[in-house]
Image (tube, rainbow, N blue to C red; front, side, top):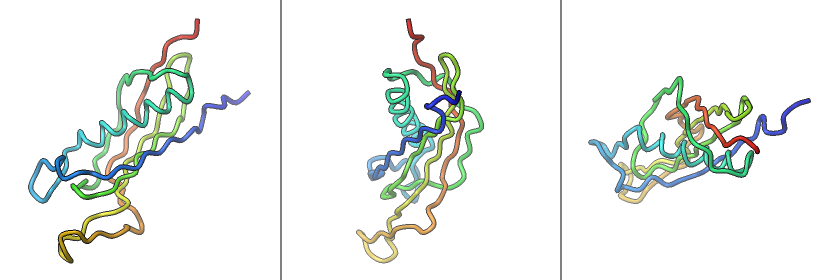
Amino acid sequence: MTDARLGLTVTHRRYVPYSHAHYAGNLVDGAYAMGLFGDVATEVCIRTDGDEGLFAGYSDVRFTAPIRAGDVVEVTAQVTRVGTRSRTLELSCVVVCRGRPDRSESAAEVLEPPIVAVTATGTVVVPSVA
């Protein structure tokens, strides 16, 4: 019998405020994406187990492109394994819109295709059912 939780996908979309710029060129630190992974994983745990769960760890984290203040990012978690108390998630953070300060201070564009900025595999744990 297949576990109905396998394949569950949750996506959040977020505007990256300029207050999160940390480096020159309005770059945002990698911890920003990791925090968003925690948020989307929390919703996965709520949907699969009725509990916020806890992040146990990450593996295979890859920072493949910059995230900048003014970007709109889409963060997705998909359940790829269901254990007794653990869930393995494939995570991605993609930039779907980006500011274009070369055009004007408020110009922006939708990116086609989006830019994959961060990927990871994560493990969350939930309480055992009594």
